[in-house]
Length: 165
Image (cartoon, rainbow, N blue to C red):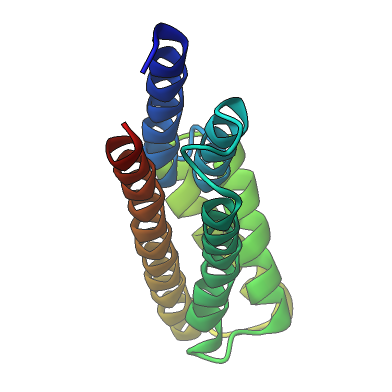
């Protein structure tokens, strides 16, 4: 491994670790950042170290992470028959909370959005508390899935580097 390959491998590895942290703390895009670093390294090495088959696998895992995140949020909202407005409020609250870039805002945003949506739809107070707790469960479940996929991406990257060099 020459200097330029070592430099790009280190830089992409650091970007992937930042992406892994972005899954837990929403300051960075997370999975997308990891996918970009993985693909960038594959391109820089002209797909010798990381082949197109690995890019396809990582792309499918990245897509699955996004789908499972929304499915887990939907499951959390659907568990207690959330109204359409409660579900929309939770999604919008999560998006707005993530713009603040700190974990409490990301956790509180879906709750506040869900409460506003449920109040708008005329639901009772007990329902709101149950809905908020299942929104949190959906968020935590989605984060665990994304973290697992992120660790898989980083592990595959390290494995391919060790195997090739």
